[in-house]
Length: 401
Image (cartoon, rainbow, N blue to C red; front, side, top):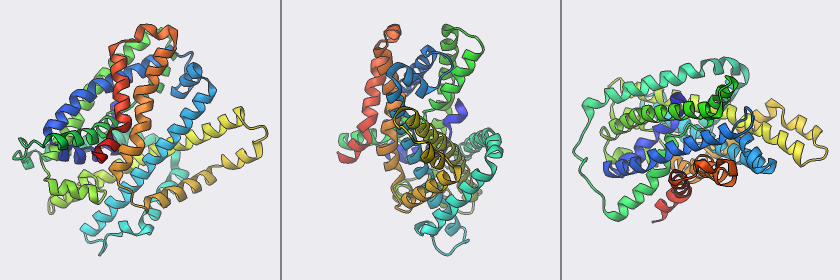
């Protein structure tokens, strides 16, 4: 659970948190952590009460019907696809800046369409050729990333500058930063897709519902505590080591916090280690998300064939062909990547709303829709629902006020 939540997303959290300031960061933490815990607990309830060993979309199919499950799969695919845009943009901009900073190239090629095309072509070719090998090493790379980020957090301690710790924004600016930070913070603590496999495994062990839910809640609580310690240590260490000018540059140039730290630490080991760790995080996140998006579109095509089309066999045999899917993915991701969309805006305005729906809103709707789940209703579910509704629009509201 812990490893699945640690990915490229937390490389952009310190940028928003640093601009918001320590007071807003603490306030967002106090509101978000209980909501994230209750949200994952609600998903555990939904999956535990569903019949047999079913995943998230299967539980939605059971409680809301097949058409609702199809729409959930479609929304899930769009979310994963937008995350691929984020990771592709991050890889392109970080690698271009790194090659320019280290003298490999005489200019930043991230603004050229060819660097992003090359990155995507290599990544997708590797996935096509060595998918099984990559899956075998994904867990290793994830935990390697955890230790590397922990090492960066510790390495930065001597560089902490606490002079701005007491700075407090005016009320309007505080409200703006709270709304901008809130969805990015929750995204960084979300790992709900991993709950399905965990609860399915518990059910296969022959545990009853009470035992499954008890184990699930214990693991969710432990995961939240570990994530809180790890992510907050990383965020605070980065924030205390960078000034506002560097954070502003990270946003304007679409750079991860590690790339900005590297540019601010020329001549130190971090100048090379930072971008390399950032690339590892982005590549592992891209690979996992890409495989998830591919499986998701396959499921959508399968559901469409079974529920709405009368004679689709010929079309779907072609559309489900791996090489065609890979080519379409490559083309669409590349075209959107060269538009250089702001990464934090994509996360906050496009990715956060569906994640809010999956994480906070849908499980509560199921708990209140299904009579046998009545015992799980209470203030915690209401709080989670309200938090999800806030997450839907908070980033856009923060940009507008």
